[in-house]
Length: 203
Image: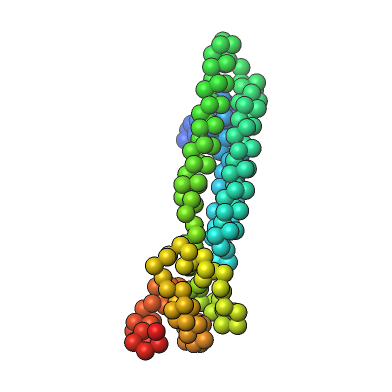
């Protein structure tokens, strides 16, 4: 940045380089940049794991637990991160430096707690996910050969109003019919059933 400021002839480039240099010399900015640099990769990993089409409630729970353990490790490291950043930036008064150290560490840990609590809250009820996998068209051919009894049991445990035997019969009909295997989701499957009026005689 210093080279740009000393060699550039464009005022805009010089001003922008100066602003960036000031940010990179600001201990507060560098601290929060480091905090999020350490925590966000774990968020990305969790997001990518949850985007996989072949997953189930047990796998989601496992990934959430791995994420929370990783975040807890980062949370415990916050004191070290704060000390390292504080050591790199001199502050005129020792007391002021100590206050920054305590306040930033506490704030960073609170952010880790907020992220962790949000994940817990959003994924506290995921048992219903098993119902979705019963209607995934790419699995219909596999389900025709081996009916997903365990997934059906999980689904009827969550949705106690469902009649297990009747639902099993209806699903077996869907799994056998090749024209159901091109569906892209539960909604398109339902629309197809309504449009073709299969519900009147198939179920």
